Image 1 (cartoon, helix red, strand yellow):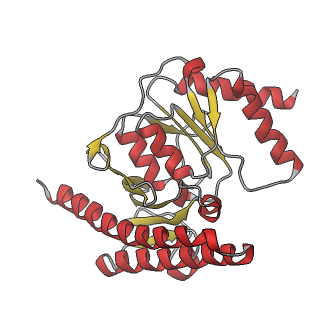
Image 2 (tube, one colour):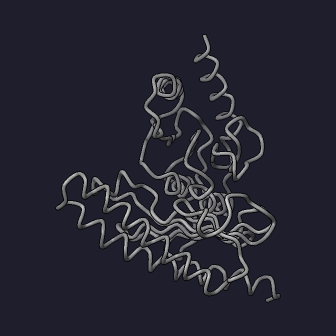
Length: 276
């Protein structure tokens, strides 16, 4: 094994340790949420989020003091908001905060490492249903240690699509979001909204879902790990327009290896119907 392989294996091992520690914090907080008032729930999310982020950042910083960091909560405090070619850890300590508040078990910690701006190592861990997704560029993707691959579905009409409503509640955003979904409901088997983009991407990677898209999500921490995992599972990650995936663009689509072009055309038709 060359030096490069060794360092990727080490990066993955360290990310796994960090994810498991954060997962334990998420698991403990998750089961408390049932017993707190509304204000307390929001506080608890913030508290759990912050505790997980501190834990993950500190763990990684201790091992890799020269690496850069981008995180959802504290980019300003911890490092950078811009992606450079330097090894950069891109972290969402708690993806699926609304699910967390409601006790809906789709929550995860997402840890991605980009090298030369390319997502290279990804770990997504859902500690509630105990699913650990991993991917390393050139080395495959795994769920709890078993290799996974994207689905072989090649008919749009038989595809399961996952998307999200997003966080904005202004009329124009809601209208364009629901019009898009409305259009897709005639073209795919069904639509899901599971509340965690990181886990949605992993769903495409392991073949539970055939297609995923989201426009205007929080930032690169939602997709950095999932993008590696999808690609290593033989799927495609791309801009919803069909162009190249941009880690910093807050726009993403993912598919198995058969449905990309059909999806892009269907989305263009959906956008077209929005304008008419």
